[in-house]
Amino acid sequence: MRLALLAVAAFAALSLLASSASAGGGTSESSLQFGYGKDVRYARAIKFCNVYRAESRLRECLTKQLFDLVLQSHDSAHELPRIDAYVARTGGYLQRSCHVLMHGVGRRYAAAVRATIGRLLEYLPRTNDANCSAGFGHGLLMYLAPQIGSLSPEEAASACNGAGTRYRRYSCTHGFGHAYMRLYGEQLPYALHACKLLGSKSAADCAAGAFHDYWIAVAGLDNARHVANLITSPRKLCATSAGGFVRGCWYRALLERPPPQPVKTAADVRSVCRGLTRLQHGSCVTAAVVVSADDPFAEMDLCVGLRGSDVGNCVRGVRVPDVAQGPGTQRLKLIRRCAHVDHAQQAACYRWLGLALNVVTNGRFANKGCPALRFASTRAACRAGAAGYEGPLETFS
Image (cartoon, rainbow, N blue to C red):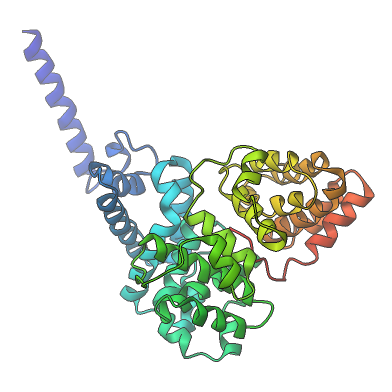
């Protein structure tokens, strides 16, 4: 008798759900949330891929589902920031992999809408987020590589000028480096030469994108063309084939091919870079710090444990874009950590973080952040760095 009553109750509940759906002309999103939470559309699409355990199948599934989400929106510029927000809330594998996954999504989307370089700014995500959105933009530019190749250096250098914020202009220029690598079949010297033709304001940031694609090709990811006899040692590549862009070479090398042992302490940083000197050593320190943690405050702790010029190189590896979307108090907390580094290097710390924070706030930090620092000397160093935010960044996420 009890089982019969339970069956009747279950049938009644299902009938009520069906009637509420038909009354509204279909099942409401809220009535079918189950375990999805408020982001039903994104959760359904992305969690569909959880059935796959093999990473290759998982990546393939996620790329397709993300592509469908963007295409169905008919508005990549505004849809990508929403996807970034969802991914940041859910974390996990997708958050760690979204940037490179979105390279493929960006290429497929550009093909689907028959994108042109003249309409590039319509498609680029309207956000400073360095994860999914930046990856999507780079994928768009990879697809547009043949059109980019037909531009004069002057036209190419100006193509990103209207991107809206300083960070988006940087990210767009970085994407040109990816595009040149795809255009020239992953031949690094040709891509770096094309970047140099863009002029001193854009060359280093473009080259960083070229190195990014180079190391992706070394890893055999993202449909990058496999080139025989690729140099797989950053010590060799960055010493012999960096084309003058040593910092960008190291920065991307360790991001795509992390050291075999985790970098957790200042001693680990020194160990990774042992035997290197001058610019090679300093560039390696920056790269080692950027792969040490996902938390910019933990990275700053490493800088506190270093001495001499290693401190300034360390601070260049701090993931400043990670505090771009948070409250201003978070950005102030980060730059105030400069008070704890080696005293002789504090000015260098304030200068770089002043510049980087001014980039991610599109010029606001110079007037709202730097003046909040306690001492005149630190305020001056912060403003001096912030003043150069329109220049090449070279080492930036």
